[in-house]
Length: 410
Image (cartoon, rainbow, N blue to C red):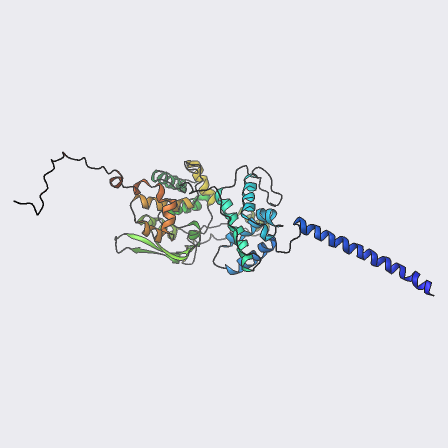
């Protein structure tokens, strides 16, 4: 009986020995990883990125545009997580961020396997602003980790080897180019390629004049409704201008236009909405059903107070006009867009000698931004009288007169 018990216990002893051997191997493997620095007991950058996206979308609801919020998610998914995702938070140092900058600069012409779009790989080095936005997203994710005590502090990830950036101006239209542009849009509005393009062509012509005389951002113009605009006679100048209640990037603000914005807005206000008649397919279907009477022509409707001032998106038509006029690129090769009309307004105001603080208030921006991006390249802001100063030539020297002291005897 005793021998039978021993024979029955032998398989259990073998299992214990095997389990003991597996535990020893696992323990020794962990010790090896610990000595090699492969074993970490901390959150990874992927954890910080998920926490940041969860917080950012909720906390900034209504304060940041949906497109900007989605941009953070895209930059994390396509670029930052493939590079930093598996690193522990303590491993993300200034040197590692610099390696990422070099990595992004060397990715030109190479297809990104994490990009699920059908875009071709870019052959250009990422623009400074593009790389700067990615570093902003990285910093925000690291700050989220600091708030949750997963990281002690955010490392210094500012770009090295850089002094002050070059003075560059944003693409705008000079006075001669602006005249060339609105003459081209006006000519196309009178004689479009197709009659069904006439309403859009007229809208684009008035859009160019309206934007260049108000300085609104394109998104602000897109949010604009007719009830936000009032034609008034200005008390200070006695001219008819537009008083605009603006809703956009900076919340709610106000703008006073140039007098040249009144006539384009009156045309926008009095232009009937586009009328959509019966299409060919609808006519064929009607006749097939046995109804031979054509429907009555729709009645023209004019914009209401709650309608958008610019209800359509005319980017393709606007870019086509720029290309045909040879105005799409400026001297530095930068592409002009609808935003260039705002830049044109600011630059022309500075050239005419307007106060920079008044321009900043009317455009809902800061004096610093105007000085940095606009005033640096406006020649009229340099006073010739203040710069071309000459020291007067000294006249003939007079002979020194003897000094007479008070205690000298007469």
